Structures are given as C-alpha cells and as structure tokens.
Amino acid sequence: MSFREVTGHYERHPYPHYPLLASVRRYDTYAMNLTALWGRFNGELLPEQEGKILLSGCGAFAPYPMALANPRAEITGVDLARHNLRRARLHCLLHRRFNVDLLQGDFLDPSVTPGPYHFIEAFGVLHHLDDPAAGMRALEQRLLPGGILRVMVYGRYARQEAESVRRAMRLLKVQDVAAIKRMLKKAAPGSRLRSYVDAAWEAKNDSGLADLFLHPNVTTYRIDEFMELVGQSGLQPLLFTHLDALADPQQEISRLRELDRRRETRANIICYLGKACKGAAGLSAGTRLMLNPALREAVSLWNFAAPVPIDRLGHDNPALRWSVRRFLRRFVKPVAEAALSSAERQQAEDYVRKLFLVRLREEGGSCQSR
Image 1: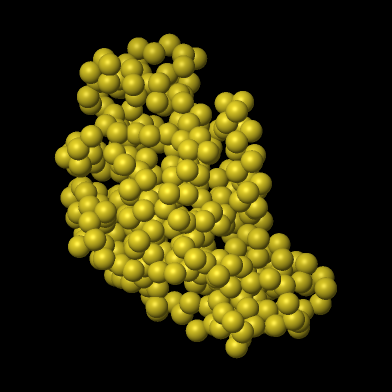
Image 2 (image 1 turned 45 degrees about the vertical axis):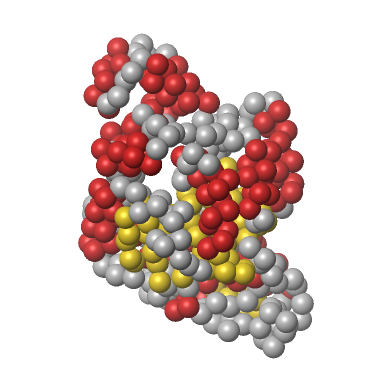
C-alpha cells in the first residue's frame, strides 16, 4: 500500500472532524502532560519548558489538546495530508495555541522528524503502515533515554465487525461515503451493519465513516502480536490505559491473552511504552508528591464547580469536589510525603494511580530532579 493511497484517503476525508470551535478542558488533558508522565515513569521532575513532543500522524485535531496540556513544550505535528494539517492549524489558532509546528511529510523520515523527543504520540497510526515494526523502531530511535511513546493500535476482536464491513466494501468496490450512506438507508433495523454503525461513535460524521470502512490499509492485533511489535523495537511496556486495563503491564498482558483466546477482547490496545525509563519513584522517606500541572486550574480556589476529568487511564475518575480540590491544592509545589499523615498518604496514593499526583524521588538522589 503506497503513501499516495493513504495520503489521498486523508486529503479526501480529514480525520478526526470536530467542529472548529469545539473546545477541550485542560483538566481532561492530564494524561498528555509531559511533566506528569516523565515523573510517573522516571521518578524525576522535567521542567515544563524543556519538553519536546512529536505527534506522528497528528491528524486534524490532536495538536490542539496536546498544546493545551503542555503550553510551554516544543511540539511538532507531522502528517501526510495537507487538509489534516490545515484543519489542525485552525484548531490551534482559534484556541490560541502557538507552541506547535505543523509539518507535511512522513514521520519515518529523519530529515522531517530528527528528534530527539521526550514524548511521542502515535495514536491510531502504526496500524495504517505497510511495516508497523519499522515504524515502531523509527519512533524508538527518535526518543531520548527516559522517553515515552504512547500508542494505540486496533485490537483484533474489538475491530472485527468494522473489518468485516471494510473488506466487504472493498469487494463491492464501494469508494465513497455517499455509497456507504445509501447502503445504510437500505440496511434493516437490527442488522449487523446497522447495529454496528449505530453503536460506533466514529460513524457520527462522514470522516468517521470513511475511517471505519474506506481506509486503504489496516492491521489489527492480538496482544501477543502487539508485544512482538514492541519487542522488536526494544521499548518496554509501562502502562496500558484502554478500558478496564490492569495497572501492572504483565498482568494486563496475561488478561488480554486470555480474552484473545476466547475472542472476547472488546477494546483497542492503548499503551505507554518507555525507552530506558528510570522507573517510578518507590515509597521512601524522601519522596515528594506534586500535582499534575494540567489540573492546576481545576483545583483552583476560585473554581466552584466539581469537574470530573474524562477517564484517560481505563477507569472512571471521581468528581473533584471541594474537599478533593482542597487536598490536591496542597501539592501545586512538591510536598514531602513524610509530612503527610497515614490517612493522607493513603488518599494521595489513589491520586498517584490516577495520575492526578506524581511521585518524585528525593532531591539529590540517583535520579535528581532538574
């Protein structure tokens, strides 16, 4: 499958297609904040102004929320399709996000994305490449030591219905969204096609229908196939974040393997991968806790609402009620864990798991904060 075909698909169908004035709340971007992610997986503080981020295959929307999450980072978005980039640029401009450089080109080309980067996102990208393993290796080479790669690939059985329809469309030589809509009008209520489309959020607009059923190149994965892809790159799984994912990566791999065996996997695979990460800071007398910077406004003294950050790690989040906000405000600057009571440490641990708080090693230790 040529780059020309994939590029042509996205030139005809920029994806995803959100309204230009659709806004994102900063607290919903907490799982994209580089300072928090670096602290989670390396146990040390990365100053916000030092971050370099790559969005590979950035599409028509992702640069905006990434820039919102990381307003002081240097962000590069790369995409093959000019129309995707034009719409992404409009989103950023309309929402006053000016720390993004958008480039048309192939993110596999080192002259386009020389790096190195602290954080790379490849969300829904690798499974559209002719050689996903080469893509994964190329991204690994662009990461700094301690760097983090967030990937999403289609799960074999989560994508099964869509792939059946997509293959049928290709056999029938259906090549445009209008033809799909004509088929949907004729589909009987309760039919497999109608039921799938009614349940799929991607099918709510033309670009989503095209991405589901007209994409020229798609690969789906069982967990063992995904881990083989990861193994070839030298990266290590840090955390799975799809629906109901277990916190321990090896336990989650075992859980998915059993679901795959029964053909009951219902989620695409979403995972943070690391390159020589130093590991999370363990509990010790010298560790400190810090608030995820993306939540600062949400816990502000002047915020009288009780926001509920959208789930980004596979499990529901609590409402940030007044008592929760008051507790989290204590950690706007790093606080020594030793200063907390036993009950406070237990409460804080739950927020560490949710990435609302980040645990940092003792200053002056082997992984000194910068």
